[in-house]
Image (cartoon, rainbow, N blue to C red; front, side, top):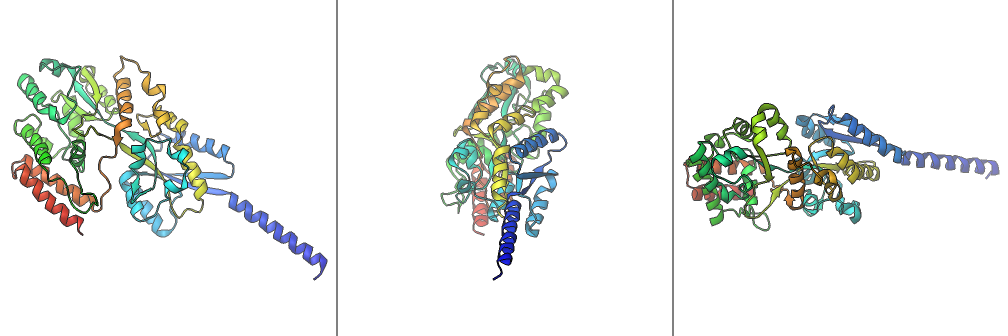
Length: 419
């Protein structure tokens, strides 16, 4: 073979290999979020700019999608093979994608050092079939807000509000007798809420292999009877059957209820709409049940399994959820970080004792050590939720005894679980 031809051929192969290597090193990561523009445009763009400065071989394209459209758009994009590389998802939707095996397994693709950054119980909220399919990003927990003036009028100690569901009946009777007001509007008519109450109380939802309902117990009957008794004695309003969180906020800020279970961010709404109620408001940890569990709402960062740039996508996912970036995000919006180090920052612990917002922030953050995703992902979850909602409604309205309502719900769950 001609020596010059061989040299030329080798040169072409060398140049092609360099070109291929360069292309392989250039990553274009598409990142979808849920309705963060325009409020958090500067923050997200800042994180992306910092990341790209550290990783000049990775470009991040940010796409913000309206909350209501996210599920439809990402399912359509996945079916068409043009899904994003990294996506901001809530737990129920990320579970749906996990069922489709559409997400990267974080347990096997991240180091233990990275995994250990996050609260273990929060990390576990993204586990399906033994695989963790997303990284927890930002969180929220609820607190108990209560009107100290109503407590004083009822002869209750404002420094010691009810901490457990079992304490609500006695406190509610004192409030009703002294003031004529409700203790609260529990938002148990909202989808999935009563299931969360059951888990806080330590009532098992399913058997060990998740094939049958397990909530038909004496404890479960007694717990439902507690709410029925409060409903019949008008310690909680009749709207409990049909209304949810927004109605609970309205009832509290109209001075008709002594307590409100909600996120710290609602203090601003109360301050604006009912300044006198705001002045009388104190905060305490989220009221819970016998199991002493606190619920946490989790927003995730997931990496799509079919991404062309898995390593780059994982690098960005762990960057936007690291301690520094989560702490910075927490300082511009009322959220909590999912990393242990960020949650221990003085921003959450060194508070102004005269600021109710600071108190709520600290209470909310301290709870993270025992916060869990209360209801595990379940197949046919919407149907199961509807059965529980009907169970509660039937019991509150006296259409069935608590025992019968629970027994019937158990039978319906078992039918659905067997499908």
